[in-house]
Length: 428
Image (cartoon, rainbow, N blue to C red; front, side, top):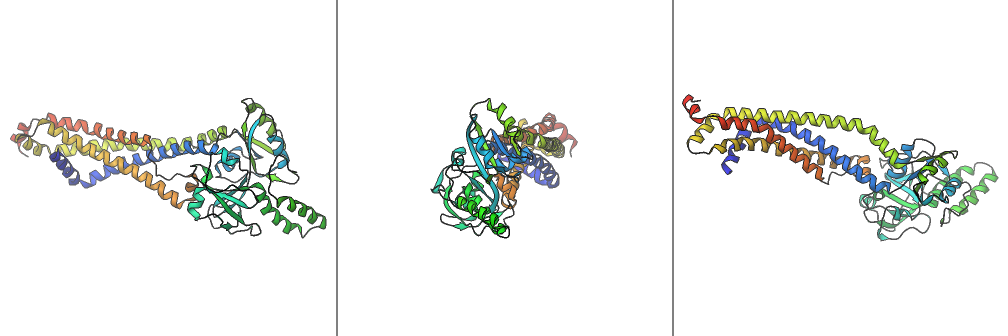
């Protein structure tokens, strides 16, 4: 076996260009398929984690898909704000089991600051690694990825900025309302890992103070009205269902139904309310997949074509190798090499090319995703690191190996059937 391996390796190195082109073609096919597998598997996992069994998202009128992406996946800008008065009505509806209000719009070094309630920990089955949950305004709990990327620790203070910038270059704009880290979450492997969580009144306070600066230039009546609002906002909000909602807004409301019949009545009720819209995450995510189906199928078709080309290239490479080495093989057969020696060497050549190509292809796909995760912010937010090998990829490697075996089988059988005595009589 050792001799067969040495001879096979020598044959491959004897034709470096042909071997390289064959391996490159098959490796490209495997890399494309590996990328598709990783994106599909990770997307399915992330959606399950990030959606957190939310049945309905309520927000401002606009794109339902945008509402779901901004409120659940945090990869888009919100459609706007909705009055807390309307949100309270929905929270108290008999069809509603659980609700989770969100206040969005700010960020800190590309990580989003999300105003919400402590119930979000239960929604995502999250736990604290250290510290405690917020109990006053301007206190925050950070996700594990935020802690790791920004080296933030308990007691650290920072200022948030307007917008949901992913560049990390936006300057602090809420210097009147500093936040303090009082808790760090354990990894949840969901979007929570990349969020900075605080109370909704913290978001109101940050924006309310700026509104005060503007209102000072207007009437004295407006200024007094804002002072009243500021007095309310400077206190922690114990229960959003019971406070006076006058003049207050949130960005979205995540809802879990109490019974299946709610799926019929709740969206209709919400959509009939002026300025509000309801979006079902399951429907919108399916729509998103439908939008990307064409791209996925195109990449898959290209990968299949490259696989076929790679198989043909292996066939041609092994055939040429077999034809060029027939006389040498005849000499070896004459000095005692078995008949299976010939077929084994040809099959091994095809298998070595296929295995090497498959390993290189999968490795390149994972390396590309790793680089994207470290250099491209949206990929980092999505959490696709390329560090996980899926079982489907092992099947992909096996498929590539079988392709190499099938492509080299006919040349191997052809070499096996040649009579070595005829070749020796003819000479080279």
